[in-house]
Structures are given as structure tokens and as C-alpha cells.
Length: 507
Ligand code: 6LW
Image (cartoon, rainbow, N blue to C red):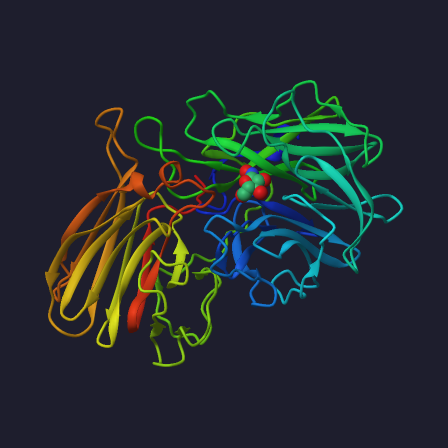
């Protein structure tokens, strides 16, 4: 990468904020496509498109039918879909993922259009281990490389493995969790990129090279090529990366990282997000440097994507791809067709504590945001929730002329506050704002819940510390999802507003 491939303008990083970890990217002509992990959420594997590597628009979810994505109540939160690899080969898009659910394992899908439809899965029962990568050697043989790191030859049409898996290269001495392998043919070498150190503060990206895709591999002398461990940078946990070359020959890395906030030890609440970094090649090895919160824009013309509308009026017969549910979304429990212009949810599980809760949400993508919804609880009980998992969620719900603010934090469940409201639809609101530092124990943000009065004024019902809905407290691999739920009977939602102060921008 030479200096003239970067401009003076700055663009915001992360390029895809919110719960979008383990990015995998490929380019076809002038179009880039990117996919991420989706865990217990359905539909799964969000697919994004970009023309400039900076601005991304979600064009679908690869796994949007029950036949492609089986997530039963046996599958805990933070299991399910891990670490896809997306590649374009022989005129088709190839997607390989692990479904960490009983009887599922590694699955392969193909599509001619990445927006879908994607094929039914080819089951890869012979491939053990998470984070599968796909590459084709010079003879057209398909190689699948998994965390560990090991590799096996594969017949992608049948899913049959050809031979036994062979260990490759596992990163630094004593480094934990060698994972996220990706193989690339670049110039005279095959490069094996991996993540190591675990997906927490020790996360890192390392690389090795050899003349064959099956090794042996020689490690880069300046590994890890990316890590923010032991720094006080605002972006942390940098790792799990993929490389892509732009049409002008420059190289770029997409990778996951987090934005911990508050005092010590720091809490990240949006999950692991997708960041971008320019790559320079020196003596045949990639040099990346710091992954900043704002980076110089690539020097080519930027192609902004249309801004997402603040309001979803539920006027479409299908939900937009940003909407995700917990494990499944049967139409008899979730539909926009029953009452025109409204989203209707019919309860199954009695609360967000249950693995079969009826919930439709979107990722919280901004550190500051405001959410409102108009709910008609005449035939049931439900409302607006911020969900980390079954044991960590806050929600404001309406039924029988009353609004209640509830909190579940680990084993504790409490009604924080309640008040009466006039019969009929009610507007529930949530404001998320970073908490000004007071001392080393200050939490990352405050979630203020309330009710909108008929004159539009917001009456607060309670303000809760956001740390309890962070990955550092809840554990696991996900982040916050904000959405609508039904806990009893049938609940109708007229609209949902999500307003942020953050847009990927150019300055
Ligand atoms: C994923 C692994 C990782 O499989 O986290 O950060 C796991 N890296 O590569 C789940 O996202």
C-alpha cells in the first residue's frame, strides 16, 4: 500500500458496528461482500455489500429458512452459528460455517447471488473443529482448514472428506486458541492467516507462509501482525481477520474488535464489531499497525449506502433483514400480515428468560441511541427489551393499564418500577447514553426507560447501569439486541424507531 492509496479524509471505524464478529470478505469485480457470525439468532449469517470497503449495506441473511438453520431450545445462547468463511470460486459464492448445535456441525452453502437464495446445506460430518476456511489449490482441490489449526481435502459437492486431517501451523509458542484460519495465494507464496490469544483482551492476528497450501509454513518474524493487547487504545480485542485486495492492487484487512467503555476492567456492550485496516506489504509480510476509531479513507471515490430509516412502520409483508429473532421465527408467532401496518407477536415462552421467547429485535449499533415503540397490549403482555441472553436483559412492558420496568441480572429478577397508564396503545421509550466517568468503577452507559405522554413528553420510569448487559458480565460471544417481545397472549406493535447519533462519516 503506498501513501497515495489513502486520502486525507477520515472514515469511521468500525465499518459495521454492533454484534457483527468474525468477518469474512470477498470481492468480485467492483463489489465486496462480507458475512459475520450470528449465534442463537434467526435468520443467521448477515450478508453485506459495499462498493468502497467503507460503507456497507445489509442485503440479506444467508441462512433464512429452517432447513438451513436449525436452532432448537437445546442450543444455548452464544452457541449456534460461528465464524463463516465467504469465497467466490468458479462463478459461485461459497459459504462454510459451523452450527454449534447438537447434530449440526460444519455446513457448506452456495449461491449465485450473495443476497440469496442460498442452497440447502451440504453436511460436512467428517470435518471437526470450528472456524472452517475454504481454499482451492492449483489443481482445483478444495481444502478445508479449521481451528487448531488442521486441514483436510474435501469434495464440496458431496461434503465427503478425502483423507485424514493434518495439523498445519498453530501460531506462537504457548498462544491460546489458534483459530480463524484463512489461506490465500499471494504472489509466490501461500499465506496462512490465523487468530490467537483468545477473543478477549489478548486477541491477536498472526501469519505464516509457504510454497504449498498444505505447508510447511514459516511464521512471520514480526508476529503478531495485529494486536492491541496491553495498550490503552479505545479499540480492543483486535483479532479474527480476513484479507481482501482492492481493484487498484492495495490490500485491506477486516477484523473484529470491541469498544470497552467505563472504568476498570472496561465493559463492551455492542458485541464484537467489524473494523477495517489498510495493509502494507514489506519483504513479503503484511504490516498493519494500529486499528483506529477513524482511519484515512481509501483514495478511490466513496460510495455511501442509503441511510437506514429511523422508523420501521411494519408496512411491508416481510421484515427487513436487520430484524432477528431468538432461535426461530414461526409465522404463527410473528407476522405483519394479521393486522395491516402492525407487527403482531403471539407469546410462547412466558418471558425473556425462556429459550423459546417470541422476540424480534435489531442489534444495538451505536453507543448512544434512542428507541421508541407504540404497543397495543389489549390482548396480551409485551413490550421493548434490551437482550444480552436469557439471564441478562432489561425490559419495559405493558398490560392491563400498567407499565412495568423489569431487570434480569444473572440469578436475580426484579420489577424496578411500575405505573398505571390509560387503556389503549402506549408509547414505550429507551435512551442509551454513555456514562460520564466518576471513578474507576463507573459503568459503560445508562439505559433510561420510560413512557411517552400523549403530549410527546418522556416520563422516566427508571435508569439502569449498562454494565449488567455487557459481554464482560454476561459472558459469551454476543452483544446487545434491542427489540419487541410478547410474554403473554397477542401483542401488536404499530412502529419501532431507532435513532442514533452515529453514522459512518467522512470528515
Ligand atoms: C469464533 C472464533 C472467535 O468461532 O470467536 O474471535 C468464536 N474468534 O474464531 C465465536 O465467534
